[in-house]
Image (cartoon, rainbow, N blue to C red; front, side, top):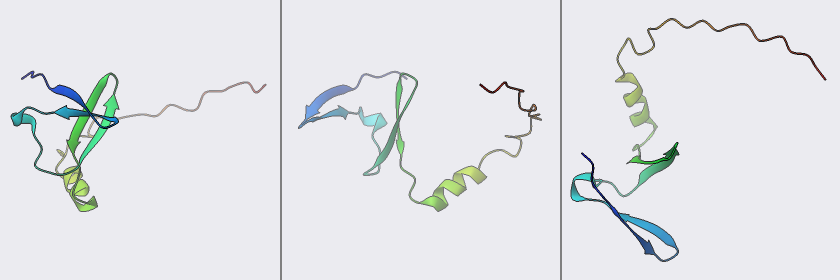
Length: 77
Protein backbone atom coordinates (compact mmCIF):
# COMPACT_ATOMS: atom_id res chain seq x y z
CA UNK A 1 0.00 0.00 0.00
CA UNK A 2 1.51 3.31 -1.09
CA UNK A 3 0.96 6.34 1.14
CA UNK A 4 2.38 9.87 1.15
CA UNK A 5 4.25 11.19 4.20
CA UNK A 6 4.84 14.87 4.88
CA UNK A 7 8.38 16.19 5.39
CA UNK A 8 8.93 19.31 7.49
CA UNK A 9 11.73 21.19 9.23
CA UNK A 10 12.33 20.74 12.95
CA UNK A 11 15.13 23.08 13.96
CA UNK A 12 18.03 22.34 11.61
CA UNK A 13 16.79 18.82 10.89
CA UNK A 14 14.27 17.35 8.50
CA UNK A 15 11.42 15.42 10.12
CA UNK A 16 8.86 13.04 8.72
CA UNK A 17 5.22 12.70 9.76
CA UNK A 18 4.29 9.03 9.31
CA UNK A 19 0.71 8.00 8.53
CA UNK A 20 -0.93 6.20 11.46
CA UNK A 21 -0.64 2.71 9.94
CA UNK A 22 3.16 3.15 9.60
CA UNK A 23 3.85 4.45 13.11
CA UNK A 24 6.37 2.61 15.28
CA UNK A 25 5.74 1.42 18.83
CA UNK A 26 9.29 2.33 19.90
CA UNK A 27 11.33 5.45 20.63
CA UNK A 28 14.23 4.64 18.26
CA UNK A 29 14.50 3.26 14.73
CA UNK A 30 17.40 2.33 12.49
CA UNK A 31 17.71 4.34 9.29
CA UNK A 32 19.85 3.57 6.24
CA UNK A 33 19.93 4.05 2.49
CA UNK A 34 19.59 1.22 0.02
CA UNK A 35 20.10 2.64 -3.44
CA UNK A 36 17.70 5.59 -3.73
CA UNK A 37 15.48 4.27 -0.92
CA UNK A 38 15.59 5.36 2.71
CA UNK A 39 14.71 2.46 5.02
CA UNK A 40 13.33 2.88 8.55
CA UNK A 41 13.02 -0.15 10.79
CA UNK A 42 12.57 -0.83 14.48
CA UNK A 43 15.87 -0.92 16.32
CA UNK A 44 16.50 -4.39 17.80
CA UNK A 45 16.12 -4.40 21.57
CA UNK A 46 19.50 -6.07 22.06
CA UNK A 47 21.88 -8.54 20.48
CA UNK A 48 19.77 -11.46 21.73
CA UNK A 49 16.91 -10.17 19.59
CA UNK A 50 19.19 -10.06 16.53
CA UNK A 51 20.21 -13.70 17.07
CA UNK A 52 16.56 -14.70 17.45
CA UNK A 53 15.87 -13.14 14.05
CA UNK A 54 18.72 -15.13 12.52
CA UNK A 55 17.50 -18.40 14.02
CA UNK A 56 14.00 -17.75 12.67
CA UNK A 57 15.32 -17.92 9.09
CA UNK A 58 14.19 -21.01 7.15
CA UNK A 59 16.57 -23.99 7.24
CA UNK A 60 16.99 -23.93 3.46
CA UNK A 61 17.95 -20.24 3.33
CA UNK A 62 21.58 -21.08 2.48
CA UNK A 63 20.83 -24.39 0.79
CA UNK A 64 22.04 -23.46 -2.69
CA UNK A 65 25.53 -24.76 -3.37
CA UNK A 66 28.12 -22.09 -3.91
CA UNK A 67 31.56 -22.59 -5.36
CA UNK A 68 34.17 -19.92 -4.92
CA UNK A 69 36.52 -19.55 -7.85
CA UNK A 70 40.27 -19.34 -7.43
CA UNK A 71 41.81 -15.85 -7.23
CA UNK A 72 42.62 -14.33 -10.60
CA UNK A 73 46.23 -14.13 -11.74
CA UNK A 74 47.24 -10.48 -11.95
CA UNK A 75 50.32 -8.68 -13.15
CA UNK A 76 52.05 -6.44 -10.66
CA UNK A 77 53.19 -3.00 -11.77
